Image 1 (cartoon, helix red, strand yellow):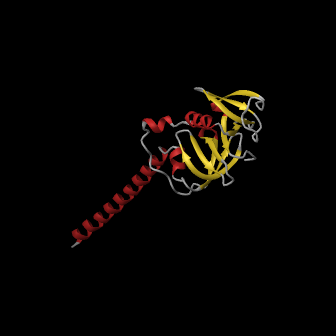
Image 2 (cartoon, one colour; image 1 turned 135 degrees about the horizontal axis):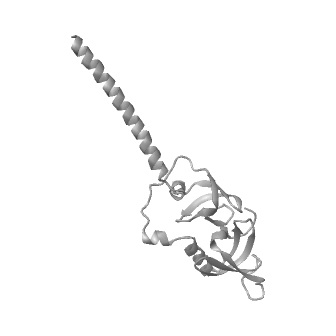
Image 3 (cartoon, helix red, strand yellow; image 1 turned 90 degrees about the vertical axis):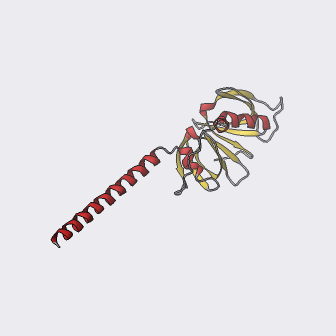
Length: 189
């Protein structure tokens, strides 16, 4: 009988050690998996929900997360504006909750839908935009062209269509300096 108690006791100790090792391995695996999550994937879990972004040069930018690309997010602010935000300018994110999207394979089409391509779409629309730069400066006008690393903006009042007589200047802006592009009625962030 003593042998049976000894084996039972050793078995219980072994089971407890094995369970503790499994818990530690599980926690370590969860940390490693979270360590591989990129901000875009974390944000993708909040699609359709309101978020607040601390953006270099633009301050707080808030709205419902409407879209996400490899280097940008699209917010709808509830005032008729869409705000295309460069992920490189994002410093903080509020409102994420516990949701995280599963990583998607970077397919050829998805990888090409970068900020430059989004800006090209806005240039085709010919709608007035407000560019907020990472240094806090703002420019209002119409995107004329998009190069490989810059955009050309015809600077004009937002309440006037882009016409030769209303264009005050044409500015080339480095895409890396663009923090937020607002469409619709420009105004404070």
